[in-house]
Image (cartoon, rainbow, N blue to C red; front, side, top):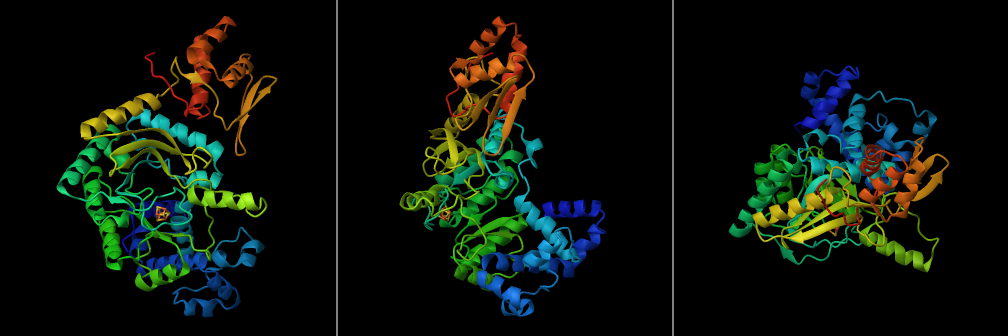
Length: 488
Ligand code: SF4
């Protein structure tokens, strides 16, 4: 296993935190590295397999031996022993390998990831729009779910539909019906499409995208060829998430090798059953899976299903029969793109962003706009039109200003507040804020009308625009409604 850049920087952080790590010697410490990847294998088994968890609590060494896990379970008590954890939540492990595993693998899975490329986004309109989507999500999603969403700028569907057909599919993928093969015509279109995106968003931003959505990438026999061109143009090899890692083990192994050679830091395998998990461990070594996140969907796993897409459909049917039979999931979306979703089969683009799945957006993402393109020039015009229409960096005079429909508005004696179950934002202590809140809450005035109205009460235009833009940037306005672009 060669350690990826992100992990090296994590090790750097650890070193700076005076954890007595010498980076150079750490990277050369094969025994430590081996220890960490075996902890990862143990951790995956622990999370995936109820029987293993039960065995572990009565006979830790026997359980690890039975599952051929090369770890010392005593050293890993902070992972599996509830009593040990509860006795003293502050106690730290003596295991250096476990400490690094916690910092590198676990925190990477739950930490906010969306700031790590903020400074690379060169398109200011896209940057401002993405920031607003993140701010909106802060009030709409459970904090840990919010923090784990990367808000990737682009994703591509290289097939139409998905052959796997998971009952819980959070984005309601239809059955597989077509594939965007790498023939001469499509290969050229692919290259041209990526070049247009590079021109508009920049390679560093676009390189954070990936090539699947309501599809499984391995349904496309030419997936790796598309990824190679992606790498050639954007300089990064896209992350793969597949539920078909075992369909052709040699293909999967070669893809892992290819992605690692091209410095892709992480891939993900969806695990649909315990027998798939067992076969995965039979076919792939701890080292091969060291940089693969397992998304455990099997019933024996410690994991939650999102209330989104088909899973939400099923839950709603259960609730109709027996309202007390199901609990709400803290996860209400699996969407992770704030940007452009391409279907290469249909030659279509949607402008999307995550939201809690609801009646209108049952797959857990808002579709702000969509269109089709015939060639690269056409695509360029379409993307530019969407950016102009939906990604202003400030409110425009002809925009109708209203609060998001999921916000609860309340007037205060000296201002107003808007709230959701996750966040309350108060705006107070300016004489005109109470009036401003009331006007926005009516939801029928344009920016220009609000400016003129407050001006009659002596509020300068600059002050009104300052507050309107502040609220706008916090993602509090309804952007699902149509904005009409005007020149200021
Ligand atoms: S969850 Fe993934 S693999 Fe399963 S049906 Fe949906 S897109 Fe396909």
